[in-house]
Structures are given as C-alpha cells and as structure tokens.
Length: 523
Image 1 (cartoon, rainbow, N blue to C red):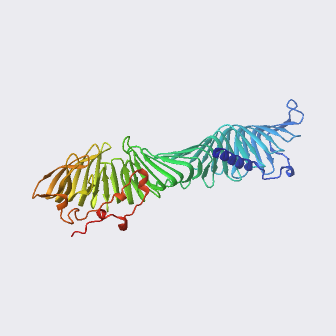
Image 2: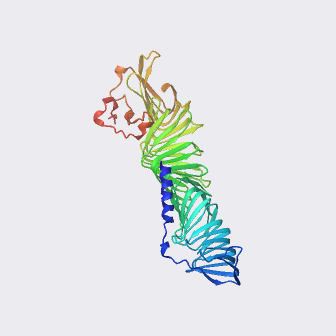
C-alpha cells in the first residue's frame, strides 16, 4: 500500500509538471526565416514546402533555430531541420541535435540523435528528446544522462522542468557522485538546491558504507541525508536499522530514531533501542531509550538492558568494546547480574561490572566492589571479585552458606562455578549435611587464603593455606549473631528471572524483608 501511495505521489508531481505555464491559444505562430544561403520551394516535397539550405536561421518569438538545412511548411508553419541543429531558447538554455521536427502551433520540438540540452551548468544528453516551449518541459523516453556539477544522473525515462530547474526520473535511476552512487526507481532532483528526493526503494553505496531507504531526500551539495521507512546503514562489520535516519557524510555522523537496531555479525551482537547515534570518524556509537543488547549464542544468549549502550570501534571499524551505563541488568541461563555500569572488551571477552555489582550463578549470589567475568568460546571461564568479595547461597533447608574475603577468583566448568580462591581475610559459614540432608553442624572458618571446591553449587571441600581457624557448631549451640558474616545481604528479589526481567527495576523494601534477609547488625 505504501509503495502505491509513493507511486501516486510521484505521478502527481509529474502531472503538475506537465501543466502549461503559458496560454497556448493566445500565442502567435509566425516563424521568421532570418537567413538561408539558398531559399526555394520544393515541389517534390509539397506545394507549400520551402527548402532552406546553408547556415539557416529561423525564429519564433524569442526562440532562435540554427541548422544546416530545413524544410518549412508555409501553411502549417511546421519545419524539419537537419545538421548541426541548435535551439537557443534563452541565454542560458540551449538544445543541440542532428535532426529536429518542430510544430509551430504547439511549440513542441522533437530532437533526434546526439541530443544535448545545456541549461546553465546542467547538461542533459540523450538520443531522443521532446521539448514543449509552452510548458517548458523536456522529456526523454529512452535513456538519458545528466551532468550537474559533480553529479552524474542516469535513468531510463525522465522529465525536466526548465523553469523550476527540476528533473523527474523514472526506472533504473542512478546518481553518481565521486563519494557515492545512488540507485532507485523514482527520483526528483533540483539542479539549483542539488537535493534529490526518493519515492521508492533506494540504495546509496559509498566508500565506507551502504545506505538503504524507501523514502527521503539527500542534499548532494552539503552531503546530508534525511531518510525514512525501512532505513539501514551497513558497514563491513555492522548493520544499523531504524525508522528514520539523518546522515552527514562530511563527518560520518548518523542519527537514527525509532526501532533502532545495530547488528555486529563479527561479535555476534545485536543492540536495540529507540534512539541511536554513530560517529564513524571517531569510532563510536550509542543507543538509548529502552536500550538493550543481545549477545547471541546457540545455547546460552545474553540479554542486557541499560539506560545507554555505547559501542566503540578500532581503526578498521571493528567493534572493540561496549559500555553500558546506569541501571544495568542482564540475563543468560547460566549467569544473571546487575550493576550501575559495565564494560565489555571484545579482545579478551571480559565483562567488567562497577558500582554495586551483583551476579547470580545457579544458587550462588556474588557481590563485590567490582567484578570481572571472562568467557571463552561462548562459555563462562572465570571471574575476579575485587574488594569486599562475598558469595552467598541459601542452604537446602534453611540458613545461608557464605564465603567472604578481600578478593576472590572463581573458575567455571560447563558454565557452573567449580572452585573459588579467596585471598585476604577469608571467612566461611556453611551448613554441613550428610547425603540424606541431615544436618551435621554449622562450620565457621577463617584463614588468610583458602580454596573452596564446589559441586552443583554446594561446598564440597575447603583447603586452607595460612593461619586457619575452624569450628563446627551444632545448630542449637550456634552463638547468637554468628549465622551471618558482616556485610551479608540477600538480594534475590533483584535477580532477573528471564530475558524480559531485565527491563524491570525492583527495589528492596526493608519493611518487607524477613529477619533472615536483613543485613547482620553484628559489629
């Protein structure tokens, strides 16, 4: 339906262009023979046919006709001209061809072979041209080439309004510029403003990118494009799609709006939002307003949301890092998380979380001042937790298993935490159970450093490396306040449970927490 409307719109423009700008009936049709070396009647050609030979000059009103020879009908005031035909319409508009058929009544000129129309600095070349002096409309039905400044335009069919300095192109249209080439089926081009208007599927292919749209206009003088309807801009590595796109080729700046999608095939990443901007020369772009990114994988894709997502490129225009700012939340089957800001580096597949970061891996909740997560071959490899590192998991029946230390390094096997190295002020609390889940006791341990082995998210063994102290309490003998380490928080209400949860902003309400969820008051 949209394509039909566009075609009707373009057709209306052409129809309006065909409207006469002068009243034909009131125009005089006298054609004056200003000069001819030989002037005689040719009985064989017709009793009213006057044959003119040698440097022939004819005139009608203010228009002059030049040729080598002509046949003039004294009765109809029509004439045919041959050889070096030149129509001087005005000081700036001239038409040349090998042959001319001219109707003095309708003011319509048909020009054949090697036709060239020159209007100021604009040149139209074709092999057949019809020019109407009343409507000031020139049209070519079969292939034309226009040169206007740095632009060369080609089309199967076309019209030119000499009074408006405007071309109307149809079928197989090309606009060739030193920096890009435009391909479309319908276009309007103004030679004064140097603006081209598109009314259908259009491709603009440049040195650095290829742009597609189905409606819009391009200022070829300023190198600005305003495009809409299924717009896209493709580079070697990225594809940007949106409802609308403004593009400044001079500085490599693009401003996209509405259903913005950036696809990075090299890094298997899709970024979406409602507003997007790209600075090609500076190697950066961003997406905001409902922004989220999908890092796709066959088995475990990552979905992440933030207020704003930045993507940075290297000199080869390949994405090298992504930054997410404010309210970051992400979900994948094997790992979920939240933080204030995040950085992802493509070179080493490292994700860095800053300011109140929280990770959830299976049954484990991980917190620290900052965290690094490393992936290898689309699998979780390791994580580093800096300052105030804390891991919590709910016991199978009640209570919480806890690991605390200054710094921690964790290692994954098959996307599950396998072992954790705790460095500095290491502390643990875990509920020791038999295989039948009967509670043996609650173990409290301290050491400078320790290595913790996990199986199915449960602590299966601890190795102490220096200055260890360990005590096991029966549940009923556990001293008050010893069930939680200082800094304990249970943040399960903040955990994204599926890919749609990343858009939620849950808030912990102190009044709704159970006693066991409240942070420890132990000093």
